[in-house]
View 1: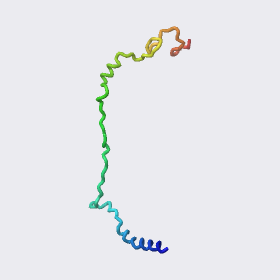
View 2: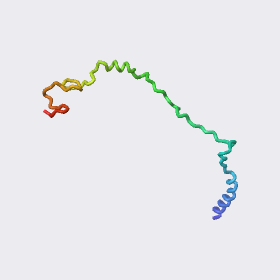
View 3: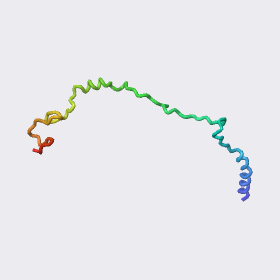
View 4: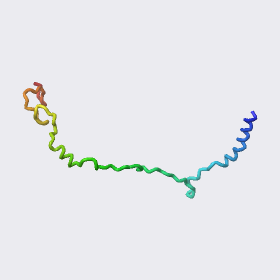
Length: 99
């Protein structure tokens, strides 16, 4: 019990010294108030610009696909805008009934 009382008395004795040690916030309207320095990391820190050096140019890509057919897997002949000239087709055309 004596130990608790001694601790409370010593805490009460140091309390007034702690009250005066608190820092006050400067008035925000005071132009002469000191301001702490602020350090902000750069948003572009570690930025690495994009490089096109490893990629082919659009001219090289065009030359690479120039000789290839556009619809290589097309069956029954014909183009996408023309129906196949095939009498074995069971598909109906637009506006016609199915065969």
